[in-house]
Amino acid sequence: MSNIETTPDYIFESSWEVCNKVGGIYTVLSTKAHTLQQMFHDKMIFIGPDIWQTAAPIDFIEDDSLFSDWKGYAASTEGLHVKVGRWNVPGMPPIILVDFKPFFPEKDTIFFTMWEHFQVNSLHAYGDYDESCIFAYAVGKVIESFYHYYKLESQKVAALFNEWMLGMGALYVKLKLPKVATLFTTHATSIGRSIAGNNKALYAYMDGYNGDQMAYELNMEAKHSIEKQTAHHVDCFTTVSDITARECKQLLDKEPDVVTPNGFEPNFVPSAEEYEKKRTEARKNLIKIAEKLFGCPIDPDALLISTSGRYEYRNKGIDVFITAMNRVRTSGRLQNEAIAFIMVPAWVREPRGDLKKALELDYPIHERMQCPYITHWLNQMQDDRVINYIGNIGFRNSKSDKLKIIFIPCYLDGKDGIVNKTYYDTLIGMDATVFPSYYEPWGYTPLESVAFGIPTITTNLAGFGLWAEKAGVSGSDIEEGVSVIERTDFNYFDVADAISEQILKLSDTDKNERKAIKERCFALAKKAEWSKFIAYYQEAFSIALANAAKRNC
Image (cartoon, rainbow, N blue to C red):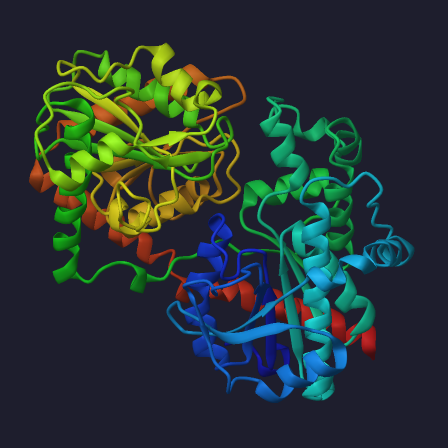
């Protein structure tokens, strides 16, 4: 650890994704927890939203003995209703889930206070802004209550807030607890994501963009305002990659103090003896689903390829993935069978009954099912961009097609009704993954892939892709474990061509070559373990504590 004078005695870390799996930030926090718990031994406390009306989340273990005296005091004296326990992830850190709904009647007062002290403009807020900011305020109240109850005034306390959603929590703590060192991490700027998502050229014109002007143009003023003001007022501002640091400097007018890349914890990967067993199970499961959908047998050694992540059609490169897979299909060069999987949660209505029954009874299917490229029925299927593009580009999943494609549009939580395995227990069966992101501040999915020994294709617009090149891969060859495709605002079809070439090259490798590639993946992933990356957080805590000390001397 760093110098004891600049190491916190207590750390509070909050996010909308604490015990609430929505996206990649959940993975950041749940994997980082083990290393931080080893360092701080129950003085590293996560705070998340209590959004469950009945049963608690499955990864939350309530512990009535943990902070029980404060919990009772907070409820009876301060009107704070919390659940206290441990996060059921490696490290088992303490966790506080706060019910923020009682604070909604105070919304106007809260927002005025933020304007008065920090010039946060909430005037044009809409969507999830109110809910997020009221939760952030409740987090600030929890930290304030805990801090005073346990008399932490003489301790070095740091509070880390993730994403614009927690900005008001950081500003509340700055206002009410000036001795507490505040940190704010943006994993992707709200305005940068919006520029990219609105099909504007983010990178070619980056140096010409004004964040405030673009927020006005794209109706993002409230989210941009809280994010920008939080970045400027906290004791340490961080982001997750060099590419996002450039974005912050330009769009938030604030250069991050530290870049804190996202690591991974090796204990999420099965041990050697379990690895092959789980891989075999995953492949059998995926191939069985494919056989039922396609109405024909599939080679057990078929090349399995996937992409996954949030349903951001352009930003995540889902469109490029489909185009690239179609080029592999029509290349005439694919010697073996291949199946491409799009594992991206959409607006699911239900598991499709015909497929579910066929899997449960395991009866033979000799003809393609209706819509033989989707596992779950969607609401408003006629408007789904993935389904429409798969059909329009020419996929039919005919028996003669060397490469077929399947859309798995659900969260892989192990109980979706069709796959019935978690994401990691499905990922382990793949031969390659592809994440051709246009907007990807870090990119957990390719890191997870190499951590599981699966070669991946990413882009130089993803933070992970840039890091992999710094870590020693040339990026030009998937046989190194990671292929980093050059992507710009304007070279969509070049990217699709490059991906298809890499997949075709991988398809020609034999078992010994695949084994060597797997070992290269493991070796690269070791360089990205939290035990290596936690030093960046130690630097951030040191900066925040030093700035807080200056303010209070």
